[in-house]
Image 1 (cartoon, protein in one colour):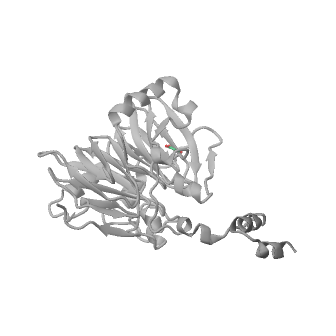
Image 2 (image 1 turned 180 degrees about the vertical axis):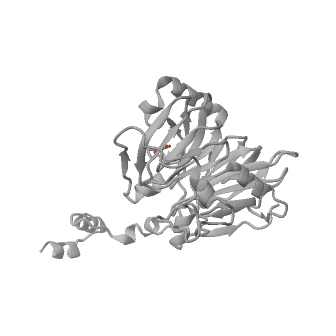
Image 3 (image 1 turned 60 degrees about the vertical axis):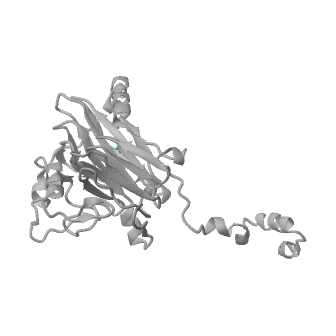
Amino acid sequence: MKTMEAAMAKTPQAYFQEVARYKTEPLWMRLAEVLTNEPPVRALPCLWRYADIRPLLLRAGELLTAAEAERRVLMLMNPGLEGEVAATQTLYAGLQLILPSEIAPTHRHSPAAFRFIVEGEGAYTSVNGERLIMHPGDLILTPAWAWHDHGNETDAPTVWLDGLDVPLVKGLGAVFAQPYAAGTHPVARPDNASLGLYGAGGMLPLGAAHDGPHSPLPIYPWKQARTALEQAGAPTTPHDGVIFEYVNPLTGGPIFPTMSAYVQMLRPGEQTRRHRHMSSHVMHVVSGSGVSIIGDARLEWRAKDTFAQPGWMWHEHRNLSASELAFLFSFSDRPVLERCGLYREEDRGPQG
Ligand code: GTQ
């Protein structure tokens, strides 16, 4: 007879209380919240200056070893997403330090990760038995569930930007992680072996097939990226200047099913046209200096700085130098949005 009572409730409040007892709620009271006209953007545009963070990272190097920390990282935390470990709603970013003679022990996890090298020559990430040798500006992938450790046999500190899909994978309730049983997993192949196989430039081993949805090429050297960008005749785009996507050479698709990475070049004084899109981006300045207007924020950036560009926020970028090129690396959640049919983009039209 309880349901009869609910139907007979005399006031809206009484009705609300009655249906709540059965773990239900009237949609008509929350429709605008469930189906927003546009996505509410919680992440804030924000800048992390390398000049601020580098000394803090080096101090962490005095506080604990890479082995003690497992990963000695200062995570880039978006102030609009308090309580969440996230640079944007879907993307994680951090700056990781490894000192001479250190090894960050082997582990693996279901979130996909990559490193974009900021400082230091010759340290390595070892992925499934292959050491990938770091140079500034290189992109190194550690796909989901691949064993990986980091080591530094040089005499200088090495720092890189970590990019992971942690907030996205966490939202799906799909985070798994596992330490390697015995410290460091063994080297099984020559250094950078996969670069020779899959990065030969328009050639692939005949019959190459790859298991997994990630790129089989685990390292994208800066030298090649820069050459591509500076190529005479590289097409320029209104919203991003000259831009290349790092792709899976077997498919032409993104490096990971969850994240794509890009590198772009703004010529001296170049100003991009304002637009917005669903994908959020973490942007990292390889070299040069400029300004990005993102929503209401004006972020002035220099070499090695990193900034967050939330999804669906109007933005434009400008190279503030009259003589120097500006190079920006970035990564985004665009592959997920596209595959789910959720990707949108809007052009703001000519600027005043
Ligand atoms: O180097 O494996 O910034 O597992 C966060 C989680 C780096 C890594 C991070 C990780 C790593």
